[in-house]
Image 1 (spheres, rainbow, N blue to C red):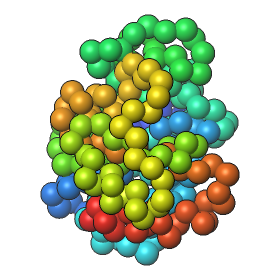
Image 2 (cartoon, rainbow, N blue to C red):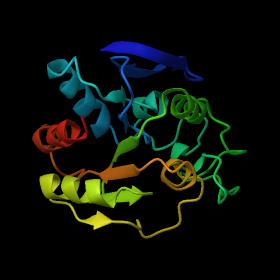
Image 3 (cartoon, rainbow, N blue to C red):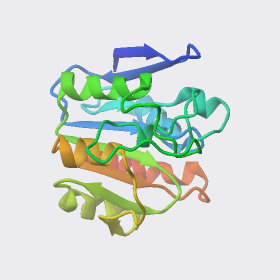
Length: 204
């Protein structure tokens, strides 16, 4: 597994894309939100035993937020509200703040560059805590298969507005089937290894 691309955050931490250089069928992203660290652990555990995987991974998109267990990045921006979607809006400077402008953040630009450069056919992002398989774009069929593995319901609508979200940007506007797997934050992360790694295998 090679480090294919990397970027430093405003605090100097590294964000990296890993893959084996083949055609990018599926991109998996962990830790959009720093207080949802499960994705990094699950991806890194998978890579330990699957170094030849054909999947592409960003284990931790928001290392600055994760360092302080905070949803937003170091500049107080919710990365999942910072994408340049038709519905992006300037919002209150709370934990859902979408930035001073769309795609203002280093982390957001890093993901956008990867989509343009590697052109994944499917994207899976790992979040918490809602225990659902949410999707944007043409991803219902694969979401149903994921649901059967992890026993979470499939929900096309997360139930609240998400202006500037990655799902809208990638799944709706870029037309890349995009799945948001909302993990159970009350479940010990070691107990998520088996079902989540089966999901990774499904996407290979």
